[in-house]
Image 1 (cartoon, rainbow, N blue to C red):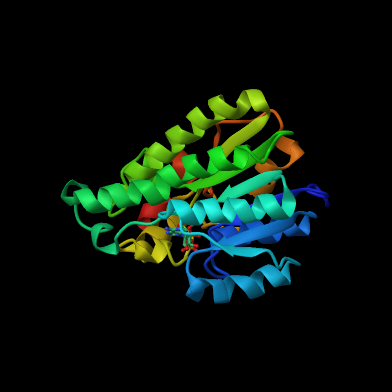
Image 2: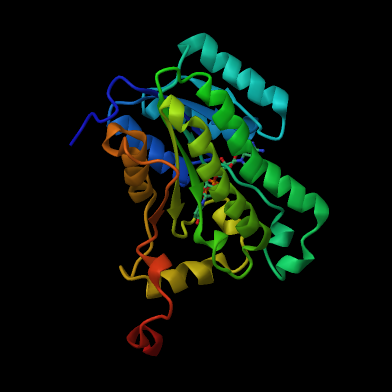
Length: 264
Ligand code: NAD
């Protein structure tokens, strides 16, 4: 099945390099005919994102730092001037101080709590509100979350709290914009080795544990996350909104690892 996004235009936020989940999504969307624009955070990442964008036929690459309201304004101004409208948007952005992605959640500082929430959660609300203005005929929006939102993962700490708030935001935004034909969903990905992922203490241990104990006995690729995003952003999922869709080899359904897996 090809061309599911033929004739559709969308914005992908959160590519840092070719390991980024957003890049796995972008490749999949482009392979299905989408015309893409990209944002990048800071000139150093811009140098990586521009050639990646070019490889999927896009020269529409604009800076955007979601901590800076003026930067978000400017970016939406450029999208609006160039395209006038958007069909879909991907938000794959998160940040927390590495020093707090270890130890106890209880020791989170006020400053990092606020910064983590602004970048990893509030940015989604602001971006959905702005993107919706460019979706007069409806659209579809996807963000990225992780199962540490509802169950405790060692070291995930304040990011788990931000993801819980992000998932609640998905539901509230889906209700706000549903009457205008704009769908809002999240993909909850299993652990992937990325720049952001490596900031979590003992990331390798967590990666290997989930690989061993997930029903599929493996982790997921960024292309598999891309497949789920394609479903949620295309007309295949027109009846679905406010959903948290897991792409985690089934890890989220497990209560206790299989005894056989514990013996090895
Ligand atoms: P990544 O490092 O490739 O991407 C994170 C992106 O966030 C980067 O492009 C970075 O520039 C961007 N970002 C951070 N602060 C920003 C700011 N102030 N303004 C604009 N952009 C900013 O890592 P990734 O793992 O691909 O992360 C993408 C999303 O996937 C995140 O929401 C992450 O929490 C989520 N996720 C990751 C995993 C994993 O195991 N890697 C699992 C589930 C969900």
